[in-house]
Length: 265
Image (tube, rainbow, N blue to C red; front, top):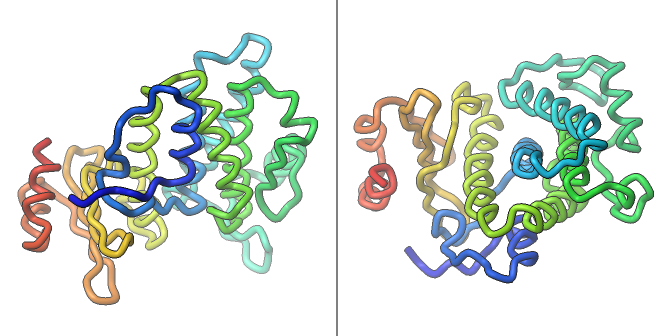
């Protein structure tokens, strides 16, 4: 395991708010930033909303729960691929009815082309800290719903801000939880991009390896407690899922010891 010098900007957003920062390693001790994509951005934003939920004031609770519930609906449906495909429309993969999508768009003060995060706009400036985190969860779910290219400047900036706000409320324990969520969402996104049915079953990333700051192997745990390994072989990504020993037997020799250690840990 080499020295990790690369920290994802979202995790850095949380670290910047803490005087007593949890020590590295981050990102599984691998010098490669997690690639979240539009799905992963929405998933991490939801995790942050869950982390601050107990801090929501009574007066804000209804709006926070409405935003987080809608965000959860959109995220879960897109993760499972349970969406309606509309041909010949710019909005081609939807989980919300048209009326619900339009209402969310209006409430978040968004155009139809994806998330626009302007922290100085009156709607955002007037939000309490936990409600702001809930707003970002809804915003990035809207980004996912309209099929925007996730990871762009607005969505990344919004998620970084949300991580910083959540860190102020939760403190240092947020950092390992956020890091773990980012790695889980990276794996889910990798699988969902290839329409792999295991995407929605991933509960955690156990181990990852990288070369030249690019991830080459990822080992995850499924809801069934079985394991899943994905790695690139030539031009193709391979996926193996099943009992622990069977999956670990597919790990290439060069990474076998590190993968075994992570799986047992």
